[in-house]
Image (tube, rainbow, N blue to C red):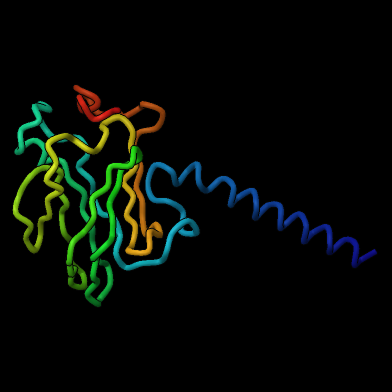
Length: 170
């Protein structure tokens, strides 16, 4: 009798743990992907300015006001050569021979510019990040997801003013 009771308790505890795990993606989806979906890395996504301030006039200044921060949270330098940053529609930026020092970050701008130590440029003429809803995904040189961040949910962007970048959607 005792053995049967403890087996039921274990089954119930296991089911409760599964229920908690199943609830995780729904709550985590608006921020970071749950840890079991990606490779552990000191390099992660930081703040994202997906809605360029002011009018979306496609000027290079406006395009460069749209950016994603990639940061190295570890002590040791990381080489990002071959890593990619992509949106949910498949637009992808491939990092060149970029070395990110420990505890430092780089801002990846959408528009045209000269790459430097703190700023990289995708050299695009159109906006990448959708204001209403999108996902930024960082992959390593083996195409494994390192980190991702999503915003908006089913079109509920929550910013006042304009939504979406003209010409971004295909």
